[in-house]
Amino acid sequence: MKLSVVGAGNVGSQVALFGALKHIDEIILIDILGDMAKGKALDIQESMPIVDSHSTIIGGSDYGLTKGSDIVVITAGIARKPGMTRDNLINTNSNIMKSIIPEVCSESPNSIIIIVSNPLDAMVHLAYNLSKFPKNRVLGMAGVLDSARFRSFIAQELNVHPKLVKAMVLGGHGDSMVPVMSLCKVNDEPITKLLSMEKINQIIERVKSGGAEVVKLLKTGSAFFAPGASVIEMVESILHDQKKVMPCATMLEGEYGIGGVFAGVPVELGKNGVEKIIEIPLSDEELTAFKTSADHVKELTKNLNL
Image (cartoon, rainbow, N blue to C red; front, side, top):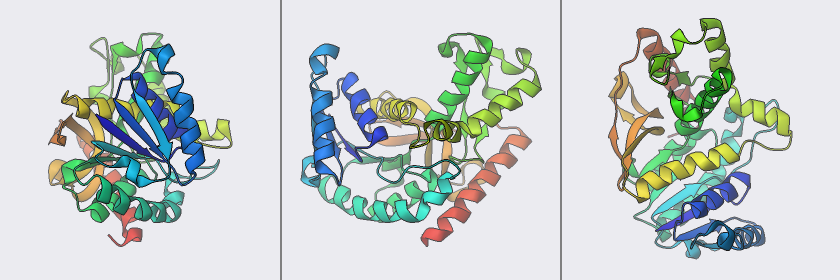
């Protein structure tokens, strides 16, 4: 199993670390700052005896190191600063994406690409167009992270183990994301029986601004621990053909009445990437919010001339 991570910043290095903790055989960390990638790879490698992992981690700037990767995760790009939205990053990060995708396709033409760079849904669409890979092999990490934040906040509010909380967030990775209330349960009890609507709405708003909350506190960067863990949950399901169902940004072609756009929906992840799109029942209000979210992503991608 070979995983390559493009971008050795905070998110990329956490993806490499979490991947090593999951015993992925070979992990390549690529960055324009080659020595930084080498240093972080070496640091992670030196921890392997302690965590009892056999993973090999190599860093550098040469894409030749990534040759034959099963999965390529792209985290490269500038991070948000306080007061910025993810959409504000589109011009700079789209240029970075345009420099990366041809290298990835040349070295690993059969790989599955997972995009983490923001604005997420637009960057996935750009990577899809540039790579010309089939749609099942280009996807974005967002829904796993947003759903984890939703579950975390509910678990904290009710003082329960996060594993008891089921929740899912759909739509674009931004202020228009859609937490699905009908799927939110704690120990199989609907959340509406456990919390007031006022408290639920407060949690939903916190989920939508979860990334901004971290950015505001850090002041010099954005979230990286939870995003790194979210990516590896997706990677593990693909590499081990686990066929887990989780929300990911994928190309919609009529599902949920939406087409021609990447947006977060539940998908089955296996060895071929997105193996099935799951259409779950949504309330009229949820479906309207989802379509609004998809329309926002469409409008954003117009700036990329896709």
